Image (cartoon, rainbow, N blue to C red; front, side, top):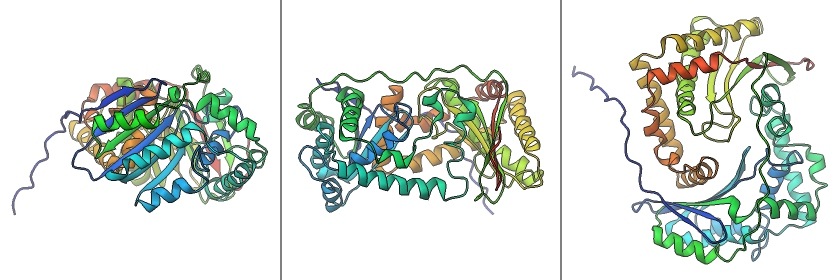
Length: 436
């Protein structure tokens, strides 16, 4: 039997070149050409998310309204034109930004830019559109949160335990009955404050040439007037001064669950990158430390994961959360699960990962990153989002190689910093009332 070939250690590779251009109205353009790609990804990220809103759920409602027609197009025309040309489209509201994207054949690039510029210029907002989309949002809330086990866990349920300020603690869905009472004037004011060219990044990737991108961006987006952008929300908060625990009732949950929240290092820092690798070592895949210890060896949990960021790595500005989540049998005390998690984090802080363990974790991170960013639409969204949030759109292309630069000493330091914090614990209990 031939020997199994060894896999060389991951190395940092040079990212494909990025091209930047700023239009006179403040819009930033980021282009990542891939000459062999037959498709283009087009994304616009705006610097407004549900941490920017003053009424809970409004940013998400407005994302829906941005598909209801623009300066030159009626409702549903955007979708019809994209789909008629074999493309796909969507929009997503995050904590600190909202993004819109299309993936189209390369020859339809100009159409995609026209569509995005049309709604940046002037979305078509009517009382009927508000009522209709508020109803759609309500159905989404019922389907995704209220009528499913563990709805909102931990993304929307953990922040009120870890943070204090309204911007950081309220969820992105809001009171869906009240959203239908929004007025056209309220929506217009929200658009004028936040959906400005200077508060947005346009990202293009795939089969597009940089000079072509600049010419078309200037043609379609250049005439949109510049407007002042509203100041961002105050998100600054001190760390927890003591451990905090909240118990939450979920009558649909078949098993108890818990989420342990800790503060992430500053976004864009080396420590932040090391925390992403630390999360992979703890909770990614069958070989993660949490699954090995809590699930297979000790039977304290049926599932255990760790994630760097409530929305995933690099998805938000500060503050953000490092989250360890677990489902556990009813007969297991939550404190025993928490103590086991703390022991694994402490072990990683004390001894660090071995070379083979670190190698496996980085390889898993790299594989999942390449798989996620292979579609041009996702790549464009990440290019725009990271440029907007971190001034680092290149992260979308070379995060995988950056993971490989994190050494064992950086992991030990990241784990030690996390282990030294006061934790926020959310405990989901099936069929019981919430207590504090």
